Length: 190
Image: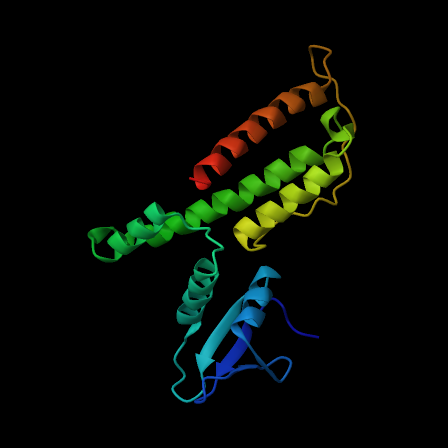
């Protein structure tokens, strides 16, 4: 069984073929992309020189997705990335991007957690399908990184000091989060 804590080592031969050292077979960029979506870290090494080619291949995977019309990065973000390579901002950009994706993963976990709580919203017809769509959307947006599943058991209803169910408060919070998510999605579509 593979040790999934260590990066999956892929060796690139002189012929440019990529070799999975765990399964002893050749892989494609699509295979590597799937490993990453499944939560595996990968490391791609040139067999002859020993150079780490991981960054180069990850950028190639992103470029191929974008060229096929799977546009996740808006033009203004791409422009800003290009500008960051030609300015003094290059020292800040990697940390900013890492923090942004960390916040996205944390937000994903919180939204999914709120959607799984027992509430009047949760018992609406079609809500389970909506939860599955949201989970798929978040997984697609983050490449499956650090995504919490929706398998948590619903929490029992609690009563606050006001006598109202905390689920009523959670419903309001969920509505606000869904509205915020809709605003962000509409901005991405522009």
